[in-house]
Amino acid sequence: MASMRLTDSPFLLSRTRPSVHVTAGEGAYGNTCAALAQMDLSPVRGKRVLLKPNAGRLAPPGAGITTHPQVVAAAIDTFRKAGADVAVGESPIVGVKTQEAFDAIGIALIARERDCPLIDMNARRFVEVPLPHGLAIDSLKVCPEVLEYDLVVSLPVMKMHMHTGVTLAVKNMKGCLWRRSKIGFHMLPPVEGLDEKPIDIAIADMSVVLRPHLSIIDGTVGMEGLGPSAGLAKPLGVIVVSADAFAADAIACKLMGTNAEAIPHLRIGAQRGYGMIDLGRIAVTPEGWQEWGAAFSPPPEDLSLEFPNINILDKNSCSACQSTLFLFLKRYGSRLFDYFPRDTCICIAIGKGHVEVPDGTLCIGNCLARHRGNGIFIRGCPPVSSQILTAISGEPSVDSKDGHITTSDSGVAVADAPDEPKE
Image (cartoon, rainbow, N blue to C red; front, side, top):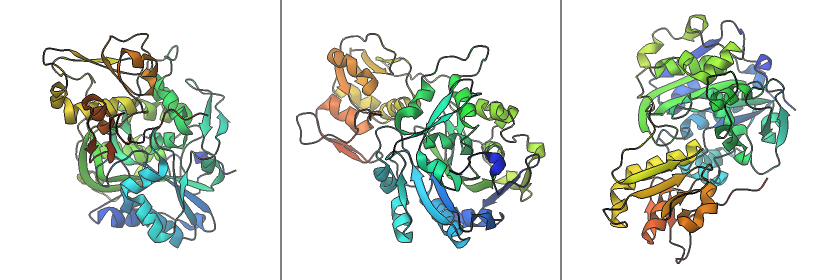
């Protein structure tokens, strides 16, 4: 099996002064090719390269949610030209099928045009990888391909994140975890003696073994505000490339108008020596790269929503369910009272920590299945907006942003959002 340690990256020439290359002005494909042209890619000749984009959700290309397909296309073409055997792999969020995600975001099309393999990294059984020095977690269930390929390349989108501040090259490797084990990062207890959130500590723990050999951060269209999927698209038109994922993230943070030191999982990982985030010790080309930046609106400090007569009950939910709820209310909040009396206070519950919920509660997601008798239950992990609307209205609905047509239980079909997969 290929080692995942950053110290083994053939592209990293200096750990104490890593190089980062930023490009802009040539479009998604051209910027990616230009950035990679600054790297010595000779080590990939004869090697198997796994590209790990952010392709874990159903979203249209250019929405700032998933990696731009032309960035993936440029990576495939460039690594093949350098003599590599290339494949693209993903382990999506629970409830999303890998091939459907590849189709929705445009990666399937560019892969077919190039006869490039697409890998559902959830299809095979995981490999248990121990973390003997982990503080929040002591092992990982890793998709086997991640350990079998010679080189792994992280291709994230430049996004803000409601729980972790940003999600970039380091956090993108969380998508290498098998099936629903990813959700476990959101359910961890506090770590004794540490003030940081358990999810931030867990991502730093993960970085002991899941650090990519090369990172290509897609800033073609990023996401500001309520990322990873409920924020606003932010066109920026840049690409950031580095063999040090932490250094790449630090430069991306600066372009986004924030600092890596303010992002706990990056700060913790850098303190442990996993990578460099000190801008003064990173060699960035070209000069003047900061001129291509634009401040991204940060995630709101208070994730509560202000909707009249709507009471949100959140106990230990993950970002997937939170994003689903925020998106649903943003799109359909004004329509809810078409189906409920105006003088009613609607209770909506998400998360696995509810001992009980009030009668009549709208229970969103598989974690609320045991409370299905108390109100309206919408299965899925998470369900999509159209499913929630269908359950409330009893009428078929379609949401162009999630790509699903759904009907009520009495109809012909329900959008595919399967129950929790069994391990």
